[in-house]
Amino acid sequence: MSKQRQIIQRIKAHATSDGDGVKISRVAGFNNKSFSPFLMVDELKSDQHSDYVGGFPPHPHRGIETLTYMMKGHFQHRDHMGNVGELKSGGAQWMAAGRGVIHSEMPIMEEGDLHGFQIWINQPARDKMKPAQYFDFQSETIAERNSATHGLHRVLAGDLIAEGELIQGPLDKTGVPLTVADWRAVSGQQTSIDTPEHFNMMLFVYQGGVTVGDIEVTQGEMVLLSKGELVQLASNQNSGALLFMGEPIDEPVVHYGPFVMNTMAEIEQTISDYNSGVFETY
Image (cartoon, rainbow, N blue to C red; front, side, top):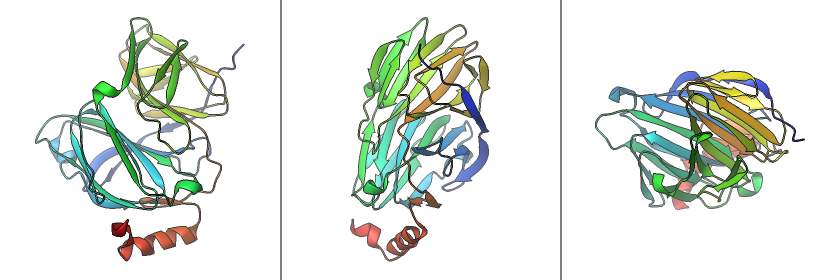
């Protein structure tokens, strides 16, 4: 009989701002081993133009991957390598900062609702000084399975086995094996997800409420789950949740602003490289 995952920790998202005053809800786990390989999840959600109009002007990164998922609204990505991509409703973009990248994400709509996520993923030490990469994928390329019984599964990255069926997402370039998926359900729908036993797993509810086993998780909550081979989810209302699974990176994490390295000496070198213009030469 498969070992079921259970909730071991609940974390409530907290309000903050980033970029040019963009209002977000954040869950961070930089020093939480059960969060790895993920580092942070930011939810951007507003129907007020003033909450996000400033976007995220040019800023640097080193040592992380970012996965941005836009459910509603448009953002434009630009980086110093010449990549330009328009992130449309339902689509996503991935960037591996590696040794260094300078990029911006700016809204390109004048009004309307905005709802999306930016997910920070740690890079193992072997990848932190590799050249940066960029990849975007629009809504129609994201793998979906919709069922009257089991709800809608959208898989952005990696593989998901839901109700015994393999769903393969478009993103397979991440530094360690991982899965990021979106599950949407109405009252009475439920799903069973097979999981690699050694992977960490967590779930963030962005709408309604989702029952994990027999415990309900409500909107704005992240739950970290125990190790196991199976997780069972159910909904008794209109609900949505992001599912995260990944191979843990068992390395030190030193975080300073947009940089994530393994030692403070590496952080100091990163700051020096950025201030002296080295990032712009990559």
